Image (cartoon, rainbow, N blue to C red):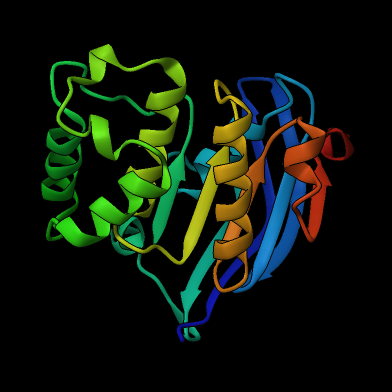
Length: 210
């Protein structure tokens, strides 16, 4: 089994003169569930975007490695699965069409068996051919998990993962986090205590402001 490693070294982020956080350091390996907590506006989503290589830190660095070899930034998308509020779904496409389209963008084959398995797990199989514009907010949130997982990533980043979900949907997510966290690196950014209780270790961004 592949061993994933993520190391943060003195990561700082500012927007203009506004400090978001400073001097964040951690090292994560496979079979870890890591929590990022803090109130709204504390920088959780900003740190998630830095970890996912969507934006850059103001200083410091993050090093992603697989089996001891550093992963090049342009290859990171092959290893990362991201669920976040700012991911956009195409309302005029069906779930299947959305998933197939994003497979093409990622440059991966559309594994129908894997996708059907995930659609079943996230209680969407019977709605896979419906337009996404007919989905509730909770169904759209569950579809984002399928996007994140269909290429079997080694680093799974969940930003506010249970937002818009009912109790049944939350239980599916909690079980998924436990399963994936037993073999991969899972990062949960949330201010929900129930989400953070799944984490083996965590940081509070309020501790990185001064």
